[in-house]
Image (tube, rainbow, N blue to C red; front, side, top):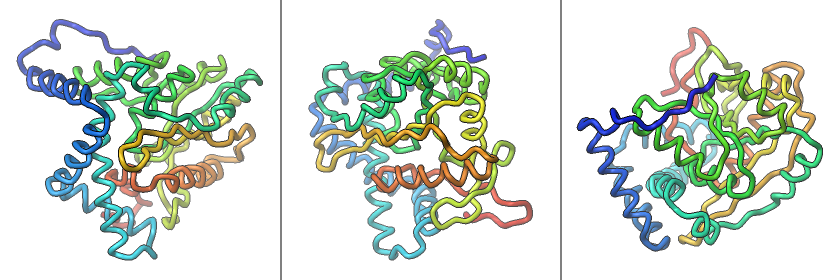
Length: 306
């Protein structure tokens, strides 16, 4: 069972003062006009690319693996744009946590939300597929403004960050569920709730199967999608929170539901789910979290890709 964090006086200990100061500065920055926030975020991203060289190499390597026919020049441009998105991801976290509903709504367009309503009209739960875009935090906020749901998350080791991310994500959503709480997710889906779920990262060998992902034939892919869909009979609905170019705001795009996904076995479901994830990524590839070591888990005895 998931126990959500609560504020306690221990979070005011001096060891957390620098973090609280940083959060306060983030709050101040996101009070600026959005075009200014956009320029600041992109600038921070350019700086981050110089400082986070290991992560830049990981992003470069992931692009090499996924898109082997992409030229070196194209990859370098993609990495540069990706780091702009990293900087904006920080700004968007503050926007998601601290902006009012009115201000958030002003800067977003919602596309095809009727797909969600059509599933709800059937009385079915929704397994909402939200891949790891760098717009992840603001995407959850935007979706919740239209239909409050339940987020699946990994509790943060830092108790202040854990409290803040939970509070921020619940500003327009119902609750949060620990990603290890499979029974809680199934109960929520069977009750007809919307459960946000990200099946696109490498979560290690224990809960993974190997399936194709872009040009990588044996990417470790979570078996959780197969278990959740099979046991809950929920509909799978992907969505893409896409940042518009030039500081013009955001699009919340809902893709077509799939209420009868292939569930023969975990490998079949994972291969199908990866194709869905690929489609989502290609709608905004420069905004995807390429900095994650997506292909770190390998078959036994096979050397690392990094």
